[in-house]
Image (cartoon, rainbow, N blue to C red):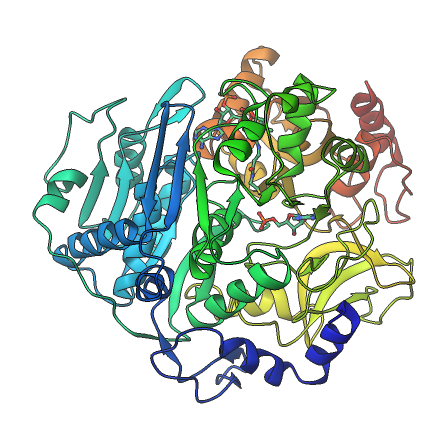
Length: 624
Ligand code: COA
Ligand code: AMP
C-alpha cells in the first residue's frame, strides 16, 4: 500500500485503524472500547483492555520461540564490556528484580525512580516495574541533585533504583552522593534505595535505607507479571517546560504497546529478529521508546550503548558497533554526527568496517541540518530519514514511513504526517494557513494511542499547556510550515524550550536559577545557534544596584549555579553582564528578537518596544 492510501484509511476512521493495530498485540482481555473520553473530556484508548507490557516484551517472545534469541546487547566502550542477554535471560533477571521490588513493598500503581547510567540493570529495572504494574520514572543520569529532588517530590516513589557511578568517557561520576543529596533536598523521603555497585567505583557509605542490587537479587523470588488496564500508567517521564517545574509526561500501557509496535513496522520497517540500535540514553524518550520498549515489543535485538559518538575511543565507534552487531536500523541525533564529522570530515574511519547490514538511518531530537544530511547521504548511500516527535507523543508525528512507502527526501523537512496524526499549521487566530506559510504546528484531537493522556497529577496544567491555546487541537510548541505536497518543515520551538546537543532544556528554568544569585536583578537566557550542539544557552544578566564584584568571578559563580543545579549538559557557558534588557512597554523581555540578532537573522523591532536604544545596545553586545 502507498502512503496516501494508508493515511486516507486512518483519516476515514481512526477507530477502525487503531482497532486493527490493537489486534496485533497479545491482550489478556481485549479492549471494550477503542476510543473513549473521561469526565474531563480527555481521550483514552483501549478502555477495558488488560495486558502487561513486560510480558509482551519478554515472556510472550519466549512462548513464541524466541527464548534463545539475543534480546539486548550491552556494548560499553567506557568499561570495555560487551554482554548479551537472551530473551529468556532478560525475562528471568527482570522477574527476579521485580521480586526485589515486590519484597520492598512495591505494588501496582506505586512509583519507582530509576536514576542510572546506561547499564542493562536500568532496562531490567524498567521492565521489572512494568511487570508489577508499578510506574517507573527514569531520571537522566546527567541531572544533578536539585533536578532529581524535584522529580522525587512530584512522583513520590516508594523505591529509588540507582548505581554507584556513571562513566563519562574516562571520568567516573559518583551517583550515590548525588542521590543522597537529592533525598536530603526533597520533602518526600523514599523508603528504600537499591544501589547497583559497579566495579569501577564501589559505594562505601550504604545506609539503612540502601540495598545492594546483587545481595537483594540473591534473596529474591521471581515475580510473575500483573495484568493491568490499558489505561493504567506505565511510566512518567519528566521533560522541560517553560518554567523550573518539569512536566510529568504520563504514558499508558495499552496505547503505548499498540503504537510502538505499529511504529516499528510502519515507520522503521524493522521486523522481529532484526537488530535495532538507538544511540540515545534511557533517561530520554528516545531511550524509553526505541532502546527499550519498541524493539522488545517487536522481538528485535536492541543495543544499549554506553559510550559517545567520539572519544570512546574515536569517531569510528558508531561504525564499529554497527559492523560488530550487524545493525539493520540505526537511530540517533544529528548532533552526534556533527561531532563525528568534525573529527573525521571525510568519514574515512567508516572504511575500516563492514557496515553493509545497515539499511536505514533515522535522525531526530532536533532538525537535521541540510549539510549533515548531505554528508550522511554521500557517505552511506542509504536512506537518511529526519523525523519529528517529542517526549509528549512518545513516537513520531512526522516521518517518512519506510515500512509503508519510501517518499523522496526533502532536505530540511521531517517528511509527512504519520498515520494517527492529523497535523495542521495554524495562525495565531487559530485559522489554518496555506502551503509555505509559517504557523504553529498542532495536531487535531484525538492524539493517537501512545501519546500523553495527561500530566502526572496535573490535569489542569495538561489542559493549559497543550489544549487551551487552540481548542480541539494539541499544541506542539513547535513552529513551521507545510509545502504544496504536504511535507512538513519544523522550524523550531515557539516557546522558551531549547535543544542543546539533542537535550531538551528550559531557558525559563535557567533564568530562575540565575536569579537565585544575590547580585542578579534580572536576566534572560536565550538559545543561540551552535555548529556542534544545534543550540547553546547564552545568559544576559542585569546586576542589582551597588553590586561591586569582579566580573569574571561573578560569571564563574553564575555558570556554576546552573551546572550544579541542572547538570553539566545544560551547557550554559556564556554569560554577559548588561546594563538593561530590551523590553516591550508591558515589560516582556524581547528574547526572540535577541535570539535572532545573535543568530544574525533578520528581525523586526516590535512597535511595542519600550526603549529602542536598549535594543541597539544589546545588539552591539550580541554581535561582538
Ligand atoms: N552524566 C553526567 N554528565 C554528563 C552526562 C551524563 N549522562 N551527559 C553529559 N554530561 C556532561 C559531560 O560530561 C560534559 O561535562 P563537562 O563539560 O564537565 O566535560 C557536559 O555534560 C556536556 O556534555 P555534552 O553536551 O554531551 O558534550 P560533549 O562534548 O561531551 O559531547 C556530543 C558532545 C554531541 C558528542 C554529545 O552531546 C552527544 O553524543 N549528543 C547526542 C545526544 C543524544 O543522543 N541525545 C538523545 C536524543 S535522540
Ligand atoms: P524531546 O521532547 O526532548 O524529544 O524534544 C522535542 C523537541 O525537539 C521538539 O518539540 C522539537 O522542538 C525538537 N525536535 C525533535 N525532533 C525534531 C526534528 N526532527 N526536527 C525539528 N525539531 C525536532
